[in-house]
Length: 312
Image (cartoon, rainbow, N blue to C red; front, side, top):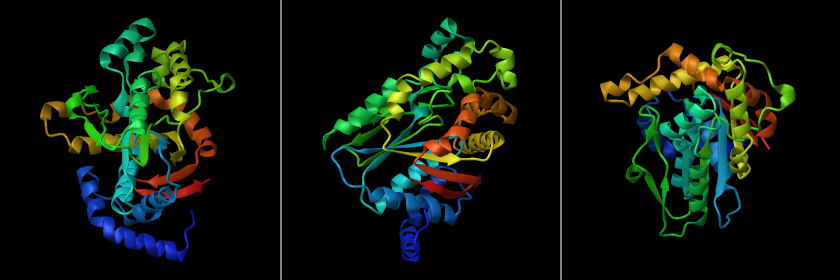
């Protein structure tokens, strides 16, 4: 995107109007160092772009993808706010993290396939049916219909009670779905590599788990991803950035936890490094392939230094 001066002036006016609520949202998300440019150069231009879409009888489904901690959910929340407050469009979003399989379900797969299947995150550990049913319900909703939006606690490793899930009324103009592997294609055999980190070498040397997850990605995940009207990719330079961003995300998440017992579940930096190893194989594939596949590529250079690199 290379907006004209008149567009830039328009974005500044929008930002002036929306800034109080945007900063309020940032505070609720425990983000205390967000920059004006993040809104002026990324959030508002993208919101304006989505607002230009032709109205239709069903929602637009927008996917956001990128490595762990890249800012997908945060970007989604801010775009939804601008669409609602400035452009009077209805929008709702949720994450692939909200549709994890239960620990009991994952443990069952772990007993049958491989112990690593119990660790949430990789393809095969999500309840894709729950995600597609939620999207279908939103697509088919009537003005008075309420749709429950799934919500999962990473700290507790379980879904919040359904009565505590957000209830969305009516049919939205936009649905935003963020997923670290959103839009990803399975790794083809000619690009398959031997165990590539400590975790794989020690716990999955025969690559039973890695291939199981790749096969899972080839199934219902593709049916869901193929429904995206647009796919946004938040790009980082290298895998090391993913580790750093996920560690930053963990620290930010800890700010919102008041229960000292639950704080014990927050991972330290070494635990984060081990955890992200579970994602590394597919993440590296995504970093390589996604810039060509995605409709919109946003480059993340620093904590909140983003710029739009490509928009088909």
